[in-house]
Image (tube, rainbow, N blue to C red; front, side, top):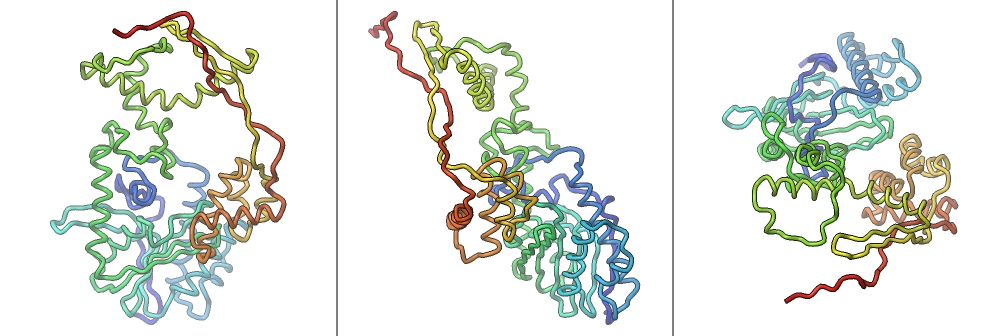
Length: 430
């Protein structure tokens, strides 16, 4: 190895190929860290994704040119400042990245792999998964750093549980047999957070096996071509998955039933008896099951619509079912326990824990959403808090101390079913 760091460059960030269950999807596919085997992701792109890609490409370009120039008297951050052609926001983010590399990664005699393809294989040579990592730095002592830039506002899963980092590290152990240890590092410049975890050579086989299990679980659920209808019992409802885990909104899950549901037409009369024996064929079983899941999805909107009609009908709704039973709902109300102050004040109060831009939207949604974001962030900043419950209580106490949580006289309205004496029909069971 030479005295100065040497760059080994892969394809441009935007030109990378991806496995259908790629490394970047492993967190979303693994139920053990809040993912779902039915996760498929969203087609297309977004402004945030495009901005992130641009920052990745700019960081790669500057680092590549710096290593080629081999100017040891000038730091990477200084080199970047001399050729800056980006805006202030980008400059702040990139400066944090370059400073991190100066302080922690760029050593004499190291090899720096940029956009390296990371491929995991089984013992028989068949491929498990592949992806492209941002940076892999192999030092002269055969320790290594695997660095991934995360330019978004949302905190990523910490390095010790992050399956993307696990997958990349497993691949690097296979591709570089001489490497003794790999430190996985996620740098999140918008949040000013860095999470790190070190894997060792004796863990390499188990790491590859864990990735294989995640991928095989996704294949069993979605099929090799990702077109298999998703079954609820195979998914992980209630997890952090943005697309496929939310029962009632998961397009893949609902798509499995859409044909049966749309053939049923308008809202049917509510049955007053339940005859399980009537479900006596595969088609009827499919339609019955589809209705159960369709109503799961429709429950919220139906409740909202019923309440809207009740408000315009003197505060109640009523109907007589086919068997003469009368169902009646009346508007009720209950007091609201807590209310948040302005989103801007909350973001300012918690700015040392969570970036203000990340909290503004959550605070507008309410206390629970604010705690959902701020509590994990506090645990990252101050692990001594101990538990998620302790972190939530600490955040709540902080908000209360600043007068940002109040107990107003407001109320929440809802529909409640009331008992109606049955006088028209008598049912005798012989």
